[in-house]
Length: 228
Image (cartoon, rainbow, N blue to C red; front, side):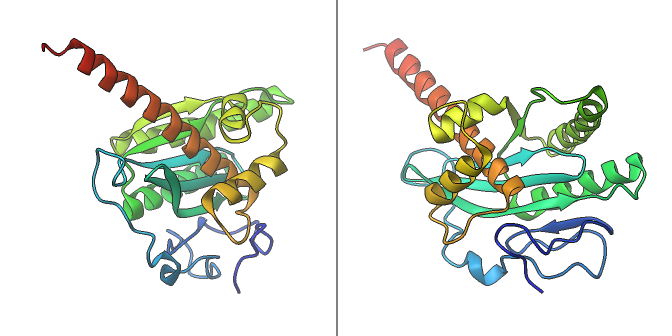
């Protein structure tokens, strides 16, 4: 069984489920096939080292944290365009204990990092939640995600939802469906990513854009300070 583009068909229970282009689950032998297969990656692996717009200068892992579903997306940038390397979701179930669910999230993202070797990571900050309990659960998941990225030596950017929406949609009040549709268009995909994965891709785009501005500013400052 494959995954639908909107994420339907994804099981809500069981061991760690990490699905995306060519990434297999860390735990559990019965996870269905991912939406994307390794053959879909043909022509996508265009990485040619850091530095310069002629090649991919950085690979970013974007993460949309959640205690039930953690979306992730790995994006390169080539000649000013975003290139999707892989995307998917790590899911947990409320049937598991909190420590078990956090371990699943850690293992899932650890496997993504091992598979794709990103240069940097980006994650959404806690903005506002309906209850202290939901904010606590999200905070626990974010802590684990920050830990696994730090363990991999990634430089990490943190962005609030409004900043992400402004970067992708041009205004901070964009609806999730609008972000999902714009991510699909910016990545040139024939079908939209699942919502959590699309949010993660938007976070990765925000980090790419922010890091690019910082690099350009540093280059201008360096050039201005050079002796003639």
